[in-house]
Length: 161
Image 1 (spheres, rainbow, N blue to C red):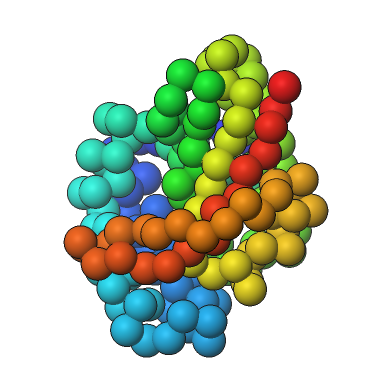
Image 2 (image 1 turned 45 degrees about the horizontal axis):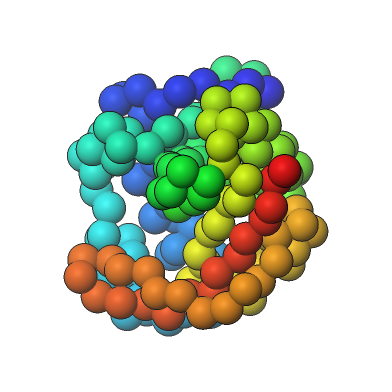
């Protein structure tokens, strides 16, 4: 298993991986209208644009892309994980845990002033327990904007120093 930086040719993988998660895993929690909104919010070209303002990492195992995650610095001491998705057939194999550990280590190494990581999720019933296992604490409500439409979310944070 290895992490590498995003390349433009990874954009289609990111789009398809995220879309599949919304369509096949998140539908029961958020319904068809929000699934449609979220799937259509980010097209492949958007990931290329995102990579200019945040770090996106591709997780590969045995030469196969199995997931991706992104991190951006939003304040001197605060980083955000706006994206973390995996191929559906790889969920439950420890990639999520290893990815969170990787990004926390990367932040400590590269952004030494950052002492807090935040993330928002619109599917807390689906992934809230995972974030809790990773020692992220739910701190309240937030809002995610997709195509100028606001969707209610839960915010989690973790102090890393």
